[in-house]
Length: 361
Image (cartoon, rainbow, N blue to C red; front, side, top):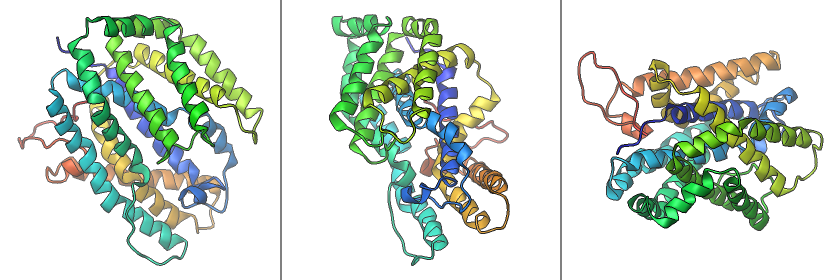
């Protein structure tokens, strides 16, 4: 039986991408932004750090959890060969295109701003996690299809039973804590092209798949405990704020990260259940907008940071250019079939007055 589509997961994917864009814009107003490859304003906006600190230990892991969930639904109508083929077209091809075409453009803008020689450089850049996800699909597809084939078997039944109980989440937490103990990432939130980012993403991808595999019992369990997760996340966040400048124990960061993610999944499953035109549009837009946004973020920074205007106006201006430019390009891309595959979108049949559909999960 085909699994029913979960609109909350679609919404959470859109929200996670939106938060990543806002986070990237905010980096340009932090004194350390240039160290991670961003164009930074001479006028820091320190108040942004409160929100950034809240997001930075769970924003990327949430994307990996959601990506693992998406694979579960994709498997319902695809063989393993079809899944690999579809993920190659949707993930690997845009990743390669972005690495050799999109990322070099914003690197040129960065070099221009800082008066460096203008030369071509390719790099994964902000698209690094697409490479990770494709690796996870290749590594875990055999396991996932065995789990699907023997869904009523002892092992899968045990997984469903464990993850449908609160104590089962302690096993998830134990895996995340073991990762930080073994790898010792400093800082925790440095995921891009690190062993920490790869292993944490792998675990999140695997557990995301298992969460959806468990069905309604898992969702009802986290809904019941949602306020506990939220309280724990808020408490650990306040503790971090009160101890700024210190290196926090990895097990606390892993616990806080999982608490926020479970809170988001639980509240999302209760309140983000409706489809609609906005979700269809944003679901299709999220991927190409993310691929493109760094070009317009860097362009906006290049244009506005030298101006004698307040830092608040700089922030608003850069945000408008980033979102406006990215969505403007998306409006072109979605209408030109030749361009769609380069940005992870399915080629659509040409029909007059037909409504464009979002790419399936």
